[in-house]
Image 1: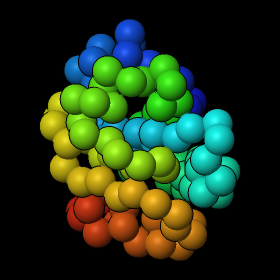
Image 2: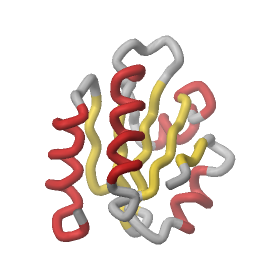
Image 3: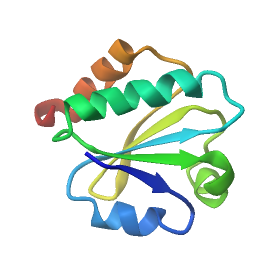
Length: 110
């Protein structure tokens, strides 16, 4: 149930080695809604570690990947499966909304 700290340097390797879906929370230290979304995602991961691996990416250390994935806002949640982005969600959200989104996107795996 480890939360991975992602950066431009380790993201691609982490994505390539993922043995289950990877949820990436792209956040920024100055972002108010990030302070709500990050802990909510961590609580979901603590309750459902079998659903996905969790990576946290500080936008300031994730700038090249943020540009590659066209991330315009924080927080942004990116969901990857088999090395490909399958879903994203940006902006503030409550834990229940994030949980419903994950259940919908992961389908039978959730």
